[in-house]
Image 1 (cartoon, helix red, strand yellow):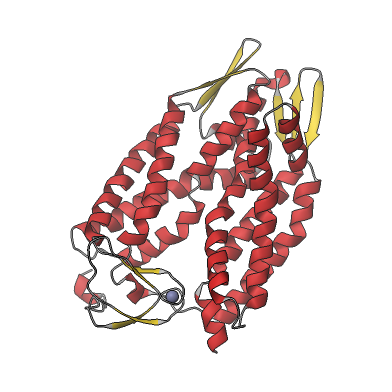
Image 2 (cartoon, helix red, strand yellow; image 1 turned 120 degrees about the vertical axis):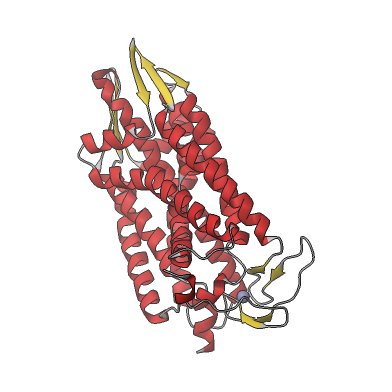
Amino acid sequence: MSAASVHVPPLPQPGDWDECHACEAPYRHRLLARGEKLRCSRCSELLAAPRVASARQRGLAVALTGIVLLVLANAFPVMTFDVAGARQSNHVFTGVQGLLAQDYAPLAALVFFCAILAPALYLVLACYVLTARCLGRSWPGDVRIWRLVEKLAPWNLVPVFLVACMVAVVRLDLLGTVTWQKGAVFVVLLSFCCLILEQLRENAGQEGDSRFRPQIDVRIRRQRALALVVSGAILYPFANLLPVMTMTVPGDTAALTVWGGVLELYHVGLWPAAVIVFLASMCIPILKLAALGWLLWMDGKPDYQRGRAKIYRVVETIGTWSMVDIFLLSVLVAVGQLGVLASVRAELGALFFAAVLVCTLFAASSYDMRMIWRGARA
Ligand SMILES: [Zn+2]
């Protein structure tokens, strides 16, 4: 396929008029000084930044490093757990196997997707597009693939997995001896790579990519987002009332709800971990549902548009942290292979919890920033 067969509009020149990709306000391209950024005067979205080429080169270097680190992070155990002479090695994948063995295939699939598959696709596809751009070429499907990279970004949850591992370690420390292994170093480095690439992606993707911005059907998006928010709100009480896991230690079996897990961490003096789980698992999902509900209710109204844009950006950023509890469960479930000495079983509440999470993630991606401004104009 030749590049000539793809319709590529010319790059905007200084003085050309364009539309902000977030709120569709008109703005004029101009030459930018080094370090200067052009932001939308209406919604303060980043519109253009100079040195895009260097952002691409750095992005490519970070993405390539990320691929190597992802392979290493999966090849080596992240931690080992010793209790009464028995030893269990935990790889990133062990939790997926543990959840599958307990017949919780949807949870296993979610953990596999967010901790392994989505990061792998995100890094490999970003590499493909950034290589083409660094060479100044247009490769087959690169514009679509870049859009896919943007869609995959909220599902790449390696940094969240890392936090879940830390919480799991302080918890498992009460039952036996936990030792960090080589894989943990690679997970830490990979988390940094993903966070840096997210920062660079904004700049690397600029320069005329808004030319390929797809049109949105506001009505369909609003309906879809509303259906997902309502489903999430219905499922949320079940996710909190039903136990998410059963922990068995010698002489004691306890079914824990999300709140029960928070209390248990607090009572044994691990209050920082308790705060993390409380914020990530209980506050963020309900705040996210409330925020999205409010955004949808305000849709088409001309009030608080800047505030709504800010809230939507926050919802997009913090939303994924509720995955901490599911990752925590996957790490703990892996210990279940030690049998009667210490075992952790996933329970029905975890399925509801994961369903709420998936609803909020899809609801946030169904919503589009342009709806804030477009509805009011129509
Ligand atoms: Zn704007």
